[in-house]
Image (cartoon, rainbow, N blue to C red; front, side):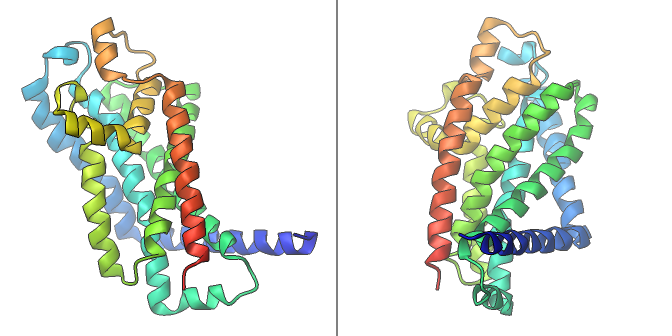
Length: 269
């Protein structure tokens, strides 16, 4: 690609990214609801199950709300970034996508612009969510925050790409919402966000090992629990893989999903 062509693609990608971010900023209800959802999870599940599980197993050393906080971050990233796909479906229904597709820019640029907006939106939401961490007894330092936001970006690439992949094959907003809800809750509940996976049936453990969110939440815990002293048993139960393993697996899944989403979007009719 020549210099002028590359500049045109960059400007087009930036314009699509900026459009999505402006739309997000104007949708106050979407911002408020996406912030209230993790607070609801922390309040209902955290406080409710804390009285049931508190003081047992690894939760003798770690407060249960501290345990689910990385999972709440994960579900926030998953929900926000995957919903990027619904903007593609809506643009198709209202005719805007057709105008973009006939413009002299590649579909690769359009797909990457959508993924980038999903990543940026997820990182913004997590940055606000981190303001709650001192109230939960978690005080990440600057380095921990940088590492956590990098891990969030890596997960958001995978989940945003999954949203784009779904949107390239789904024709209506209603259908996308149904498929989105169908995928969202199994991914979340089978990720170890709410319960330790050491005693689940083998088939659940097998599905959890295929779930990218499992490795992302494990990585989040490695980062956020850096200043918490855990015994060897608690550490083995709460931190399943090494950070390097988590990063490698999430990165591979991100590359696969991003490649699949781009190919599917390019071939979209």
